[in-house]
Image (cartoon, rainbow, N blue to C red; front, side, top):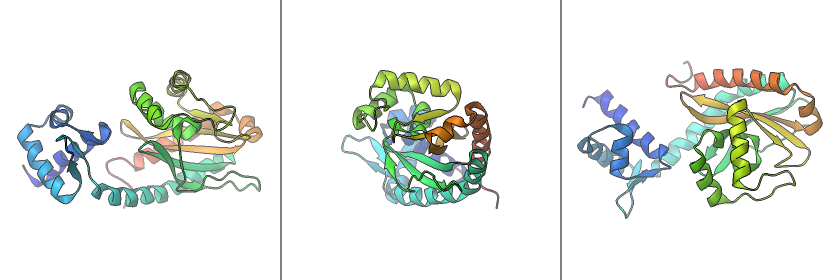
Length: 251
């Protein structure tokens, strides 16, 4: 294998593990990547030595701890790159704009630009919340198959945050189907009473890798034209997703 090809194939292996929830058998990696078993074995040996992959007791392979350091740095950089796009969302809506990602079973807020208004909403950067009660969480879950969503909420539960929180799987799956159809998600006082939020996905190629939202007092969010706001936010999110694409930010 040439140097470029070997790097490409190693990344295919890591992405195959990620797509299967972080761990997979050799046969599953082969099915996902189309690579020969011998090639996968050679790649895994190097990734194991470097700590990017580990082997479990049942001989399955899992993403390794070395990725945590890279992921933390990348996450901070994404938050920096998001600032001008979040600023545009604040200008569009007049409300606080947020960027969030799904880490394991939790939504993590990684960047924010506050509203210029005196009464405004804050979601502390670094805050971790369960996805079922937030608009950003719904957008991120809507990109997953229903079976994966079911597994997630089975692990975390769906605790009631307010009287408006969706707390059962069938209702959530119906809600996520609506998100897919509409192209945006709403939190109507489901995480915090009196606070409404609208979120859209940020796509990197075929995947939703993050969610961007605007949040504010319920009466102010409800007074906005929801369809116009969602379309404007999707346009900004598409531009941000293009920046996050394979070429990355322009240097």
